[in-house]
Image (cartoon, rainbow, N blue to C red; front, side, top):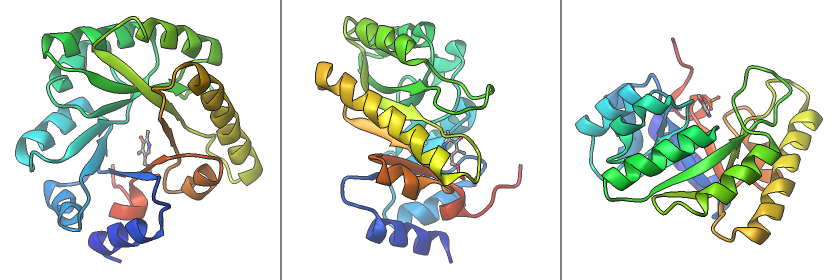
Length: 216
Ligand SMILES: *Cc1c(COP(=O)(O)O)cnc(C)c1O
């Protein structure tokens, strides 16, 4: 299947409320343009310098999502254009996004990343840290937390993956009752997006199922 066919298939099969982020990390501008030509406008990158280079070269109506781990000192490079930052995992980073958004006289939408996987290595906030971040963000005008993001454990165990996604959905629902601006729940990638959607995800981040395997 071509990239364009994969985009068309996702658009046809996804429920209407589920946003598709095409994860284009390591992929060329030509490959991104093939998805663009098929109608895709939202792309996700995990390295700020790659995203900046692609943003400069490609059509300006593309919405760029930063899905990877963000170093505080690099926020400034993407602050003029980034559409959504998925991986806010510290108060320090949240504060820096607010500062850089103010400098650029804009508001930057962001998601708090929760640690939901078993693995130690994955970044993310605990529930209590996320509650603290939500309270802080409510005071800041230029960073706006519009949802939550989480990555499940890399395992074949579907019950475990579903349970991790369900836990995040439950936390999302409780927080949304207090913070009605929370609208986005970013969960699910190529291997687990169906499980994520079944547990209430409304934004999936799909790379290899669209662009094919990555060669690092
Ligand atoms: C690479 C990446 C994805 C997409 O992974 P695939 O398995 O290729 O769909 C999704 N989310 C994050 C945070 C990633 O780094």
